[in-house]
Image 1 (cartoon, rainbow, N blue to C red):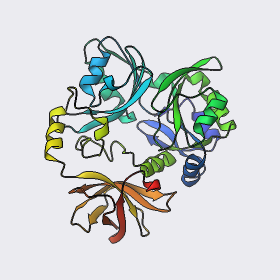
Image 2: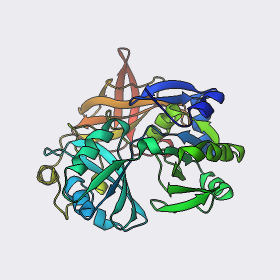
Image 3: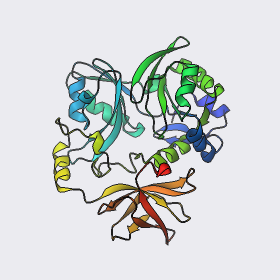
Length: 348
């Protein structure tokens, strides 16, 4: 099993580890609740070195991105980032991805950890492209929270704006930084050489960032309503069903486009909805959900919300319903009442 370059630091900070995508990563340091609240209230720092990342170069790079991904890279420019997806011919999500456009014909592609090899292989099969794995040559940190950008500026430099990227110097090393994240808070994600990763992490923690594990990262993204590939997204779900139409550009040709065109024209039979429970209970993946309108579905992601103090989740509901619809989630053979809600759930 792979280990992060920061494994020693994580261990010395009391991390509890778990296996994730072939990596041994910190799931928590003190408690998920404390780490979650630190990110919502101030600033936390995550070691996310398990996440996929590879460099794409060559004169065919932009054409490959437009062919393989449903968002259109021509919507942005060098120095910007874009959320997008790789689809199968049926419009199902092979992976959801962040693209960092660093310079002309130079891109960093950020797939999910489990899909790194598959996505790289697809790009390498395109003409005039070269996809090079950088996962093992870098550490990856996510600094997140309302105070994250100010803290980063105190330690390193003024951070790039939301969905922008930049190269910055840090104590003799070059950081590649983007204004992205997976928590619903402001912040930056940072690629750093393994030789400087621990020094950077130590500086961030000394300045006030609280180490946080993958447990808090999951509850944060769920409160924010961000889908997780493998649970809320997979090859049987489309971006239209998942409420991700904003990340689809129908102005260019890409794999899966005809299927999405038909779905947009005909309408969807189900849609991913957020919900908040009004009674005690913790929803989990697979729990049955039903509504007072006769619609039904199943929970894809669910947990206790540290900020709301109640259960929240995401579920595909058929036929689609509006926010505010009364629901019941069947938890241990007991119906638990709640309402559908538009994310971010902790602000609903």
